[in-house]
Length: 89
Image (cartoon, rainbow, N blue to C red):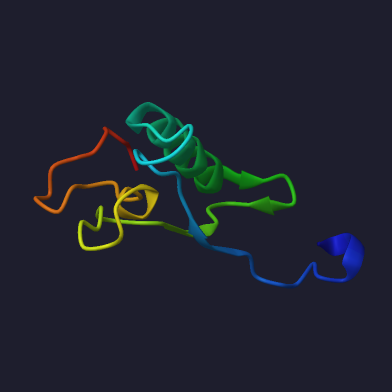
């Protein structure tokens, strides 16, 4: 960002995640790996942006009222509040 004049711009990862079911490469294992690596990375920051980076994981809960398939399966938790997979913050 500094290369393009944005060194003073705050960085926020506004929405990111990985589905745990319903699509190709969607599994609890892949979702856990993606989200855990994300949490670990943004918690440390980068060489040019040390410290934690404000980040929003999509989504807190699976949404069983969305269309069947991948759209229902982005949550860290099922609607009954049980973990879809273990994760550490």
